[in-house]
Image (tube, rainbow, N blue to C red):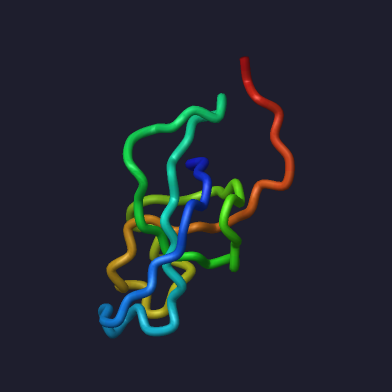
Length: 89
């Protein structure tokens, strides 16, 4: 699983038909020490998270599995909210 921090919401006036009803968020990927990894990315929100939430994400084929139809164009999905975490030193 991948860690990330929700930093915003995406409002789309047009999106793929298979994504109707999907909530899109902007996520900054982070490592287990809390440091940024790469650039912010768009993710489908399956758990109704809020801005600044620390979340678990999945990438690739697994990201589309919670959504119907499963062949929706989803590459990154938020599948959990982290309530507490101990940093690994």
